[in-house]
Image (cartoon, rainbow, N blue to C red; front, side):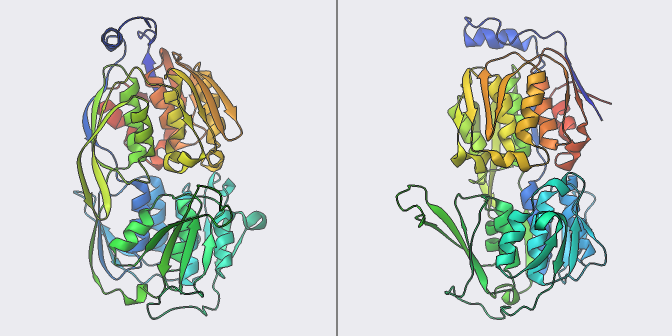
Length: 484
């Protein structure tokens, strides 16, 4: 599928740099089609994955409201169904109810599709349940590193065998003798295993926690706090999860603390059946594309309703506010342990370049391609560093976004761990490619909304992985986009 955006009548955003901001805004409103309106973005992907997984192991009925319907989350649900999870959906509101919780050895290979989250979290869950299973994925997922999960799971005694020296899918999970299986709730002791993650990754942390649900528990230490959706959901479902910020014992002189998560053992078997309602907020990573479009397209005013505002996910919004973006949050509330609210965005023509280092990368990892687009239209130099993790996503996102924005005329340079952008630059339409990566495809769509002339984005089907209604939502807000 291709996306076509035609701004043939649009003129340079920056042609009158001496004019007042109000005049620039007024002029530009006549050249680009502004975005206006309010809408709900799809349910949060990260929370939906975890709601399916934890909903399949806790006793009781788990009702999931506002779930994400993209292909990644569907892959997780299909894998769990192959292991005996049962549920039903309400066709009117797309809610989903999980009613069976006795997972068993699957009779078929589990296909994670394009979803790294599916593969990595199931490696933890299934090895913790001590079941035999084989997990594979599509060609893209088979290239992505799995050793970051397999190696720490091996330290817990799990036996997982995978391609290329235990680093790539397909992977086989081999049952082992469960000497440490707990039947009583235990306090944390010296016998509780402690794993320090080598990569700051919510997927790795979550895999370790899932692998420890039926054992003596675990201490997970990460050098930087990552998304905490798993911990929040475990607590909401009745598990005791302890968190602690500690001094880095390996670097006592450093002001960089480490983050410890402790899951005491033996809790799963003690949970009593009850009904759970998991009300999932809108996905902030999906909302980020609409936020960026509203900031960059002249005359835009957009409200995004019931968006997730988890503090480990709001780095993108906080950075933009510091750069001068007109973003406000209203109607703050918390449901099912997840904060949410409405995000109000207005066109912001005077954004400034910025520096973003390693400490901020975990909070903005999904939004970094968008920050590259923002940097192109911001005043000054932007440098992003410490983002090597981008090279191991659905594509090498550092290389992909640099190559494609260059085709549109951006002054952007790839570095080993990020990129450098000099702005502002008026983008010019061209033919670009998604590299089979949904976030690259959507970031380029946003960039195309600000470009003069015609832009074609090839291989855009991948958007369905996370945000099937992305183009439709942009159209509801006023964008004119063709799909072929």
